[in-house]
Length: 427
Ligand code: KE4
Picture 1 (tube, rainbow, N blue to C red):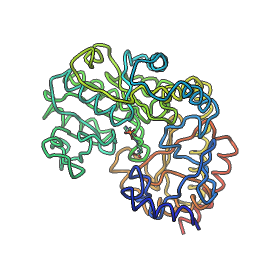
Picture 2: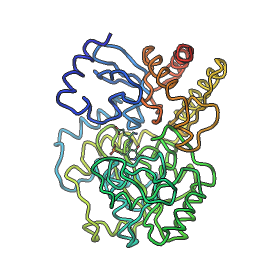
Picture 3: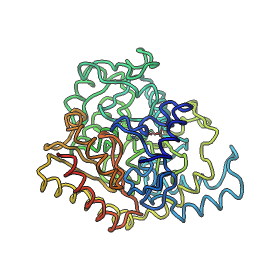
């Protein structure tokens, strides 16, 4: 019984829509009530009823080093002695920007913002300004934050104009966003043939983390690069989730494809609000006050977030990255083995320290495939795992994250509990 969580959620629902500060936290994807967090430590979360969980949500991928990582806390504590926000230039934002560029050299210049949504909204505005065009192409199942341009669902055919995916998004705006299936270069061709000369940008999560985990096929990202070049559109990699997660240098390093603009977030704030967009210098020079493309933010480059991000990235060395990637691969391989032993249709995949799984025999290469997985089995499994102290993302259409704080003992304990949870859920 979760007495205190239930009582707090009752109060929360009276003052916060759905009782949460962001929709996915309400457990609508899996049913039941969310637990209320008391504290996090390393790989673990403890709720207000003192129940402990091995956490694979990790604040939706923001915590590469785990909860309450001592060097990150020390960096924040030191920074805050001098104040928390100035709205003025600081050296620490330059230090973090230089470190980001060192890891991702194709971000020749970047601008800090506070959320991934701001980063993608700004990148799209910049792409439209740079090309003088208004249409963008996104992919089914990719999520780029809640900007109007992205709350669009695919029209009936791949080349049709987007339809609003939320009330409040005007048809005229949604119509500027086209969508195509992920991993489908023919679908992209269909869009380009109809709208290529009006396409400002192609934006993609290089590895999808918002439809569950879906990896790109080898030729897909290269195909997007070639298509963007062919029609004079910009290629934007939304690496808010994959940045510093699927490789120390993100998708460009893992796949050898360079986008014109890249958005990053989550990890670069070390658990505090920070994100950024960046890329080719000729493009970023167009951003105010260097150029005419306006974008601003009171807390952009916040010194505490910069300190937390710096501490995180400095520790996230290629060696540490490799260690966490190996642990992630062991978790995924272990889950596959358990599902096979129990005769449960199951597919799982990972890239770096990001992973996902579906209850489906065939591999998942598109959002349509993901939606065809056994969602009710996922829901039963989610709750069976949660009741055993393993917290996966509360939706079949999210990804999982392993942090540097997840030790081998955590992976072993997880696999033991996953076997019991799979057995219970299949019944
Ligand atoms: P934020 O505005 O939530 O900081 O970032 C938006 C965003 C942009 N691009 C990608 C690839 C993202 O994954 C996100 C945010 N990810 C979700 C997880 N599915 C955040 C969790 C939430 O919405 O509460």
